[in-house]
Length: 306
Figure 1: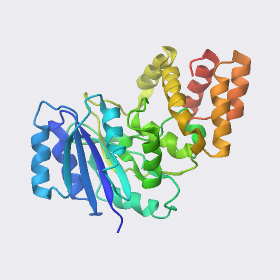
Figure 2: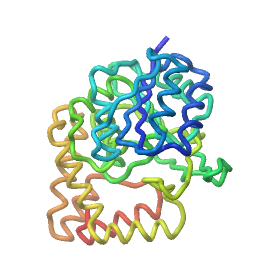
Figure 3: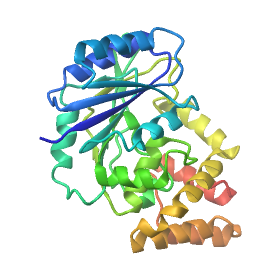
């Protein structure tokens, strides 16, 4: 029976944390351990975690103090802690609700993958409001996950991700202090760069709670699309790409030959004149999952904002 290490990061999560913890207990897959890293909560988060540990037992629940440098650093500190071991690893936010078959569905697919090959399960999410009422679904992506996609887009939230130890070894190689914008995008990047397998499940396995304190929203609607275009125009996409290229460079030897070539083309095309830049990116074959997303990508390339 494989084992799963659940990597939970918390910060002032009193309002919704209990429901998330209960959804672990209700998992049909039972061989899991919870590693909770709290990033300096000042509410009752630690009390809720301690009660859950007392009810589950210290062998199943471990609580630690986070690095207090934001959620990305907190998640990577857990993922890169060699003292935490398992056959599989699952990121978890503090305010979602897992469906009872979340882990079992992920593991059923991961068990079909060769253990020596990096593998990442992720997927779509159901959206709920602050009171837990359904209010929609995240976008459905249908193009194949790949390194060419990962260079320009993150397709799934970390709260949906479960990955094997071969993928975890890539995160270890990158290190817990790597400078990247998002831990989930980084996980998608390193897995695909090394030729790993990615399963994007179109059937939601979590209920993602939409509320004012969400760090990452649902990315839905024209208002959100317009906001992302404004951020692109102000250089956020370019800044994030700079971080990814710097972080991927030490992992270049672990890339497949094809992906090394794509990476080198991508990196070189960014600093050319507009026509050469457009031609270079065309050769890379990079793409996003939607028509609107690809339009934004074209605009970023032409404007030199990538």
